[in-house]
Length: 259
Figure 1 (spheres, rainbow, N blue to C red):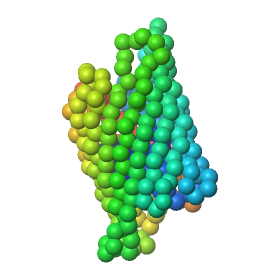
Figure 2 (tube, rainbow, N blue to C red; figure 1 turned 180 degrees about the vertical axis):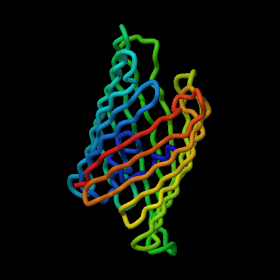
Figure 3 (cartoon, helix red, strand yellow; figure 1 turned 60 degrees about the horizontal axis):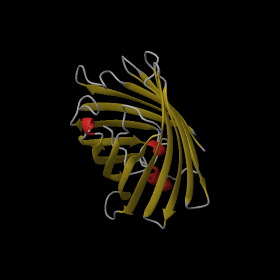
Figure 4 (cartoon, rainbow, N blue to C red; figure 1 turned 90 degrees about the vertical axis):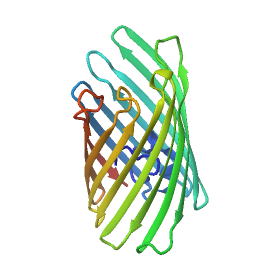
């Protein structure tokens, strides 16, 4: 959906997007693994969450990325989400990162703080809900001196999910964000996307993302599809980015289980 992530409640990768939004998912637990491929590097992630009680969610995730030419960067995330009544939820994620590049080996600690909100909307289809979410990400720093800085950023988004009938559901959303550190990648980005869900079995997605800096968050369009069968989920996405940008010819495939 072009990078619309602040209001997503249905995936198991919420710990990387908006951890607070996971509180509104109807499944008691989810687990997903995803692979992202690009011409110069690839990226692997596995994450999930487990709900205990009515209002508490714990989350965990592990990522390995930039696996190219001797790089083995990785991150371990642990999160907790608390639902506050019917409309609000808050989340916090702690992160340990290790950058291993050639002869460099650096470690960092960071945290994300997120909030989510939802409200039913009367008079649109059989059921509709308006959602909003926001987070501040990568608050922290490296444990020793390195030439790198963490990409600290703030993001917010809104989405409308409408169920027209038992067979047809449509979600449209938009995100906006600003990276405020380090200065070399400082700038705005925004995204607009939509998902059509047929009978809770087939999902079709499209979106467009605008980034101010091609070297860090380029402009691209995205196309995606998903299949749900019993407790199994399979999703695929492809990014249409300009030549010589970071996300040119990037694709992803994800497998998940809903418990």
